[in-house]
Length: 142
Image (cartoon, rainbow, N blue to C red; front, top):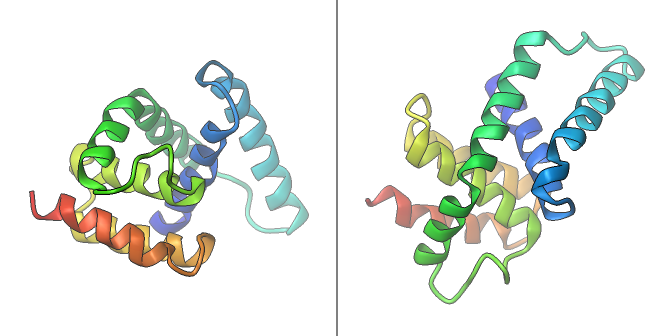
């Protein structure tokens, strides 16, 4: 998988956090990968590589471990908004991007922001990309 495809899968997995308790996430991870493998088989595309599974799992779990800290940082930067008020898609995208900006040295800030905006265009509402870009721009100036 390309980095973009991996990021999209991480986004899809992290989105489950909004509907399940943190304690349920290991089981949700298992379901997620089972579905991903079945989807690949159904579409007759190359099977999911072990390296991709490891990357998605590791990065997702690193984000989950820092979720409270990430949410706190988002709440500080998103003036007039809290993570409780944000749409679930926008919030999930922001969580992934903020993790990449602050904690992932392999991802340049500009790339994290650009990829987040692209995810927002694909999965969010009409105004999601502008909202995500505006919040993340505040992290870029730090």
